[in-house]
Image (cartoon, rainbow, N blue to C red; front, side):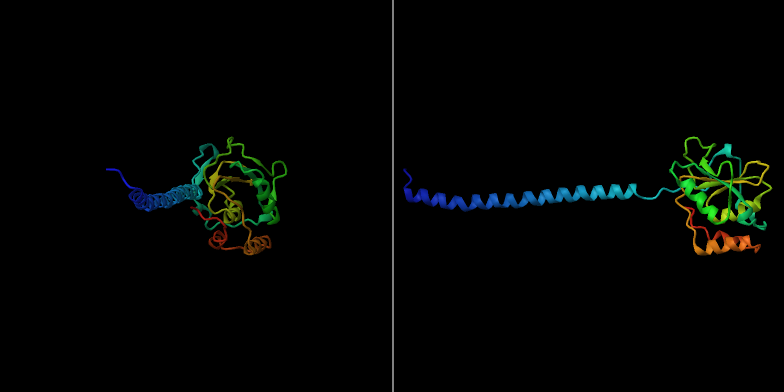
Length: 214
């Protein structure tokens, strides 16, 4: 039976809104899906970046037999703390951070430590790859605990090493866990007091250190 023009128009009118509604619904879904996917990607990226940015944890022990024999910080208890003006130091870069040894050496000089005339700072001759995986080391002769005591107050997380040297020079080797040396006014006052011949409590000295061993 032939469909009349009126019926044809009615069919077109009845099918039009449904088709338009379906298309409109799909158009609304597509942007929502895109936004959701982008949000997931951004969240995943931020999580990865946050995970990577977590500070690395370093041990106090450097596991470097070539440096000498590790000793406990308790060996410094009861020692006469030698004034900075009588302590000769060398600062070594063992972490690959360019210029850091120079900066630390200058900071120690300003605290009246005496920089070694021949090698005040430089690359650590024992750590050839500059990859010392700890905070750092203080290396000195076993008869010179008092010379290391004031430095240990500034670098409380550094491993103490007796390396059998006959002189009183102390080597400060900066490891990968070392960030920087923050010299507060209290530190300057304490070092000045030592230079005036006053003795400081070693326990109190250690609390002045800017580093946390974690």
